[in-house]
Length: 433
Image 1 (cartoon, rainbow, N blue to C red):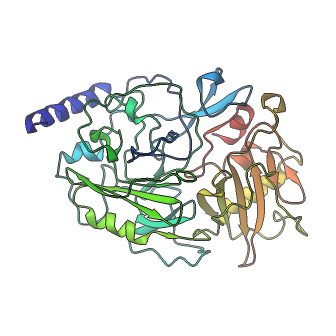
Image 2 (image 1 turned 90 degrees about the horizontal axis):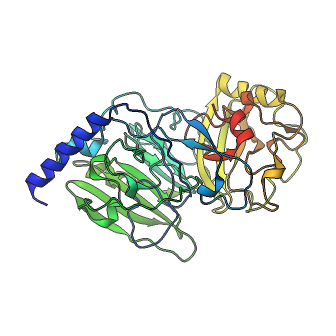
């Protein structure tokens, strides 16, 4: 492609963004899985795509009346509630604003708006629960599965588009690409049963994926492609953007994309990669439950972890049984932690809301949360949160089960990367704001 053609295309993309503006958006059925992400830089394996959404956007709950239109929910009956990203709109993006090699910086990648405060839900200084050292100045630790790494502290936790090949132009129906640098969430969203391949103008190496160049953002994606599967490793460059993929441990891969002038950031992220047993909040990175196990403590504590003095902190740890490891975590402290414990304790002593008639028997759980409640430096108490499938929903503390209520459940899923991407309608009503 000539320089003139490239400039013409950038000009047309800018006009399209301006024209799209804030026009009403059509409903886009979100997608899901846990094996791919923002710009899956691999053409080497066929993997289920994941639905992703822009950071710090309020989630909207949609009830899907036709579950047959969604993959990855086979065996579930009744109504499925799923989250609808708000899309890209007319916002600026790192690649389009960079216009080639103009996006130089002396430190962390800076997308438009990245000079604002660090997004909520990022790792903060405070109660450290692991052997991880303090992050470098201006950085934070992020953990996906059992892989820890440092990123610039303004990088958000976010989800990327499930169907990047369907994005025809910035701001269209399928454009849910984050608008700031991000660490990709691990999700179990259903994928729309739709086929499209709007990639004829993607004139960059296939390792960079199928997100249009004008929408590129720096990101880190951790993948576990499955037993026996491998991904291509190496480094690739396109117009100053550097894509690096390395293997971490036996079964994980880290893909790092950084913008022009930020090769040092790319190398620093790569150099910080390590496997860990706990994250900075105190979440065990290995899941205590195998796939299909009941989502509840294995042993009964002498007293409920909900009883006692106000907690020092609560680690909110989300797991995926199929990979047997941590998919997202965050921490609440002070009045927020005390309020969460009070809300759970005040919820009715029963399981619910449940709709067993909506699920086939033996449906496996695909996600759950453990709350690790810390007091005065002692061993944490654990409360298991089951919100998946159609029954046995609630907070299990080893002595009592408490119903999922708005006051207790919504704070658990209030911020990324701890999220619900699909749920029964009754659960969505109480757990999603």
